[in-house]
Image (cartoon, rainbow, N blue to C red; front, top):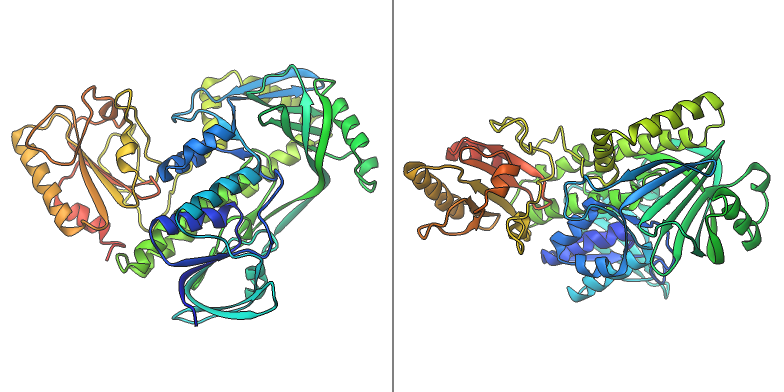
Length: 526
């Protein structure tokens, strides 16, 4: 019988991301999908800043930047008048925008990358039966010709969407609520004087219309359907009338494609790991499309899980490392489910008092730079922080204004050509030792620590010094001659930052003792 380390069920964005991450780590896996071809429609339309950073880490970002349209702000209207503008210009990232790109193109680009890594999706191929024990998962697959295949694997990951077959076979509950209002989405070719680097949100009493600009005058549009339209078929004429009405004439529709109704469900599994089975993306959580969080959340589920599977399957980490997947991702995902449901209900409210309070707050908040910064970091998922992870060392001696354990490691431009995390573009943990204003004795201690780390953890950790002065006696160092990284990381004296393969901070300290680092790494590295 064929054997693979990881069997991925579902080849949407989440499954493809997991496959790409495993492929570049040379982990044996298979990925299947019951559909005969990949998604051909827009579906998810926004790629958030944090996801763009992940694509950069994989080395595939240039192809996305060529295809996507940059949305640098969000314009909110009420009853045809400008209510507020929310700019992304305060984002602490090389990519201060949301990229508008149809899901079909996202999947195409991920597929192309996967093929470059000598892997491909098996389709159409469907999961039929499933069982697991302490040693493995046994999956029965049905191919297009009706033949069945039994596949033992070490781990199985459900990336098979809201109607997950894995969830069904394992009888995994999917609790949550539904928003009764019907919605519709469509791809539209439209002409407009509105800026093409802005997403537009039009509000009215109980009404919503959203327009996301792609390239070439193409848009992804979404709106809630009026009560009188709920049980009527959606035709092009009716949709054009709705767009004209909701946008107060700001759009002239040339043509429409892929008109589809949908209903919003807010649901999340209570556990994202069931022994050797993991759930990711829509198989684990579904919610309102408000804020464009869904696909991006699934992609980050995949990134979080991939490096952990890699280390465990290579026997370079303890099995308990996989136990961190749920406590890290579930709080993030369940919070997004709740927040997007609240925002959607607030937007659709017909209560005059609630509308007044909502609009007053939006108008006020959009003028507060601190609030806009906080809001846009949340929308673009830069603010995600793992607060209660069993594998992160939260005790730290670093400046309270410095990046903290559980946060994303900030990238910093070191020179016109180089950024700090360019040196971390690998599949390992990266341990950066900022030398600060180290004297000769401290520098000798740092060099000794670097040698010890390279001896003890060479296959799992890449250790580099971040120096403010050239020094011919050092090895594996990053030049921060203008002290830009030191300033951003609030470095005064020598400080250690351990950055995980997903670029989140696992540990940081001014304690240069070997024991402190060993205690941290000993939690999960074998």
